[in-house]
Length: 332
Image 1: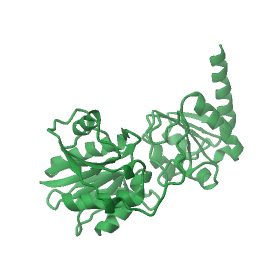
Image 2: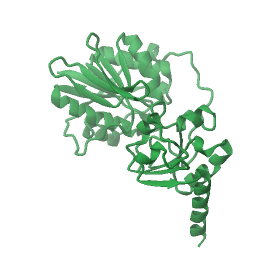
Image 3: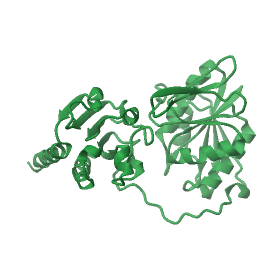
Image 4: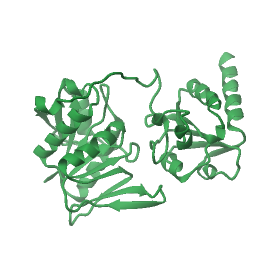
């Protein structure tokens, strides 16, 4: 039986939801082709029993634990060399990782070390039963077409998948569960890189991929000062600020807030698009939100085709009025 390897994403002491999404998809693929699903966890602490149980019930047949103080924070070289060593030892047929900031960083280096291909930011995965080729589907040409890619001549087949693309298992996977400790030798964690500073997301805030409520601003806000009501309202409703590519390119906000093909794919409960026209690249990153509110002065803006509620008007004025109304309710 071949191996399918999922590389776990760790945030602090927590295993990120994207790991369970990939495990759910891995179990689906294993129906078409018999696969042992392994999950690799790079950590500076032993895996807790609750975390191990959650990975097993989430779809893993095996946990491969690599322990080193070097993994307390993401570091490209130790991560890449250790993962390459693990893959060489276990010889998986398929390697999957989340298309997060860290996954997008180490996976290209890992593919180069292993002399194999990599398909980034996949939105669909399937298997050719007769060949075992992984069918890796992703948007191409600015999101105007969907391309399906194979890696027929090299193994492992490697892909990153945008968080929120797949769903975790609904029912617990019944697994005996094997925990394997991988020996991390000193040569694997040697690096010339040094962490100088680390700036976490502000207290109480979540990244856009983890947020349940997102208020995203676009160029319809007209100037950077008009982002103020976006931040104001976001804070009031415990939301997270998102952005279109144009305002990120204009340096109004950092890339970590960008929603769309060249940013993050999100799936919040509520998505408020303020001054966003609805370019196909942006829509591809947020159209799976449970409830979408669009605010735009142009009643013909494409964003309204995807909205559950559409407000035609100036986004700055509407957000400001909404924030003031909420503040009045709180004071009562």
